[in-house]
Image (tube, rainbow, N blue to C red; front, side, top):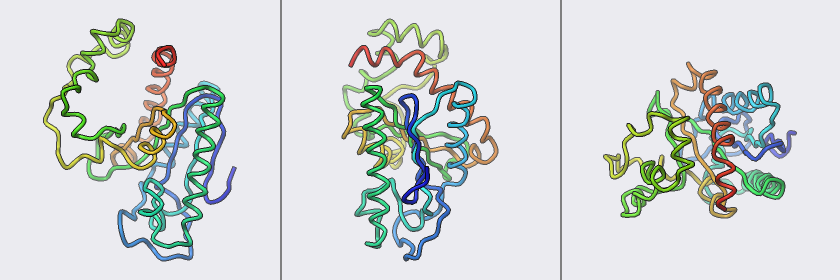
Length: 246
């Protein structure tokens, strides 16, 4: 459906994709003077590619909402006050986020859970994928950090340990905290407005994916297929455990 400067869909399983930074539509308002105004190229193609991949290969349709307005006018991954420098565009911000809330509430009412994935592009690191999941660097350096490590999960949750070994055999080689982190890279650990706001408001899992430019431009089909595969691995192996422990 197309309405109010965004495309959206009600899905058949509990995952919601958002894509807010590759709208093409121009508006008769002033361009923003603050923040990034350049679009995250190829993120719309990636989002739609993942959705189509689910439909064709698995017969599943995710929820999604995709902004159609160019980023130079509005940044929907910021608060309304920060995003809308022109009062006339606030209605678009409110309409988009109202619809996103409706999708989340529909998903929760139908499935009792949902995973929100916000797709973005990162031009500073061409061949990397950064993940924002609502944690700040200060949180990662606290004494309780060990309780969130793979080693802690391996020791205390036998089912998860088995899944790690079967599906992620080299996880023990990954670095763990405390680790040398870039103190200026806080944004990539906490994510933006969408995942921070809605994960707290609705108590749902929310992840922001920042995909490097080269990965988006030169490896688009691979990124689409891998993302779909990883998400389905999560649902097939972990989703029941998450629901049983809620």
